[in-house]
Length: 321
Image (tube, rainbow, N blue to C red; front, side, top):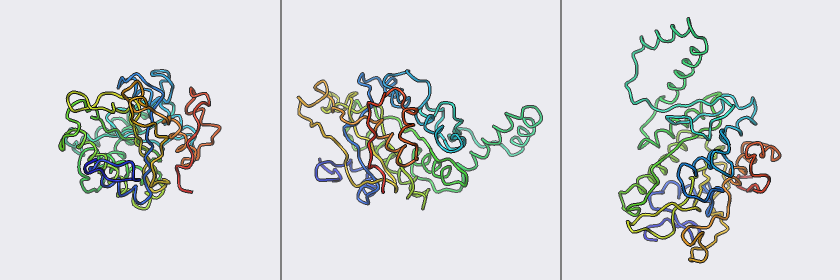
């Protein structure tokens, strides 16, 4: 309530999401509310596994739905995906080779050391030599000329923009922002939630600014493994829930609206009397993006989400005509 940024007369955004509110006003952001995966048991680890593998149950698949989608793009998706992370997230794991990058915690090596390693690999291991050369190119691209974007996540999103904007660069990038488990002091002005929302807001802005004209052709899907409880707990935080909000942002988005089959917040309307009841499957949102933005044929979406058995309808109308 106090300080919320109004959206449509009913819903509002946290005041730290100033840039995202401006994008909503410009028609470049849609909010998909009361959304969730098929998972209901509130474990972070299992919930994230379901979110990324795209199955009905945790650990049902050992590849990620975005990697399976890459396989359906031209050239079998090779060279089209990049994960900006210290490890390869499940979402991007699978048969299609995907680039990964994260900033090193060590100072840059001397050029002589790099040259010696490159020469050694060329003479002894051609596959390693190619991987080393690709890593050097990716690092140079990610660390290209830039203005600090305002924090670790905005800097990662700025690097993602450079990968996506490069000639013959990636078409799909994935970034993670952790730290949303706000069991304590969720409303604190300088607490974890406020800080994370600021990082998210600045990260979206950094990507937009880094892409320049390519922003008009871009879609960003922001989603989490589950929502939070509706009522605060005894430590002024919230506990693991079910339904929550996803955001679709970008110049290609048919935005300026909240998309929700809103279930209400009365006790009788909540899931198990405590959580926002989900009415939209996040797979339907992802399928709408894959079909209407990346051009994956509707009859191939079962290859991306094989376990949904046709029971999840594609959410259409998310992209500009």
